[in-house]
Length: 192
Image (cartoon, rainbow, N blue to C red; front, side, top):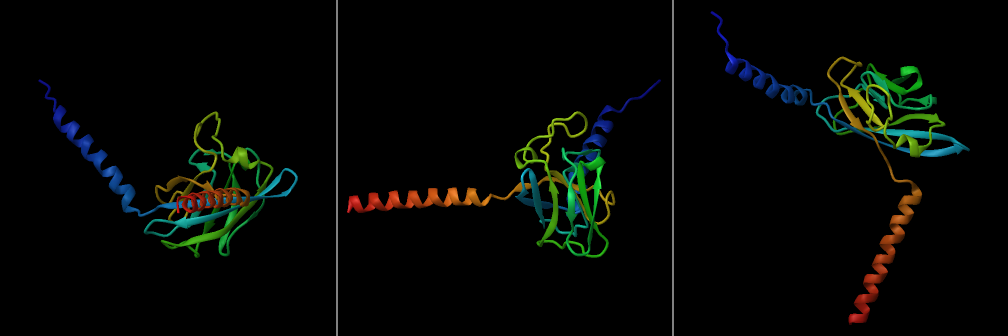
């Protein structure tokens, strides 16, 4: 005679599922990144990245345009630069860039700039979605991963790097705000 314990297996599954978020939160790993770009010659762009540690632990690896199993850059980066104490490696046959450090970890609540590379991949494409095929299909091209120290030394944290507004975007926004202020002032004067 066989006994089955369906309620115990359901409870065990629920317990395991409940632990998953707490394990991820226990690491304290969280990050954000912004990037800007300049066209340095016709069709060649210099991308500069600033990494911000929004967690409670250090960051020792930034892997840009990458998740485990896939890189998203359509063009191989050139002239890769690193912040002091960090080293760079082009990975995934040119589809991503990994920066690591063994001593100059990024502490919580701090930002670090100096991650940069040149590419013929235009900004309009970099801000797009990875078309595939394979792992990561449908993810933003700027999906990136950080680790507390060495790559694969912990579960890592995946996030999307975001572009900073271009100077022309700032100018357009400031012009719009200025016009709105003038319109408001004009209506105030007419009502007085």
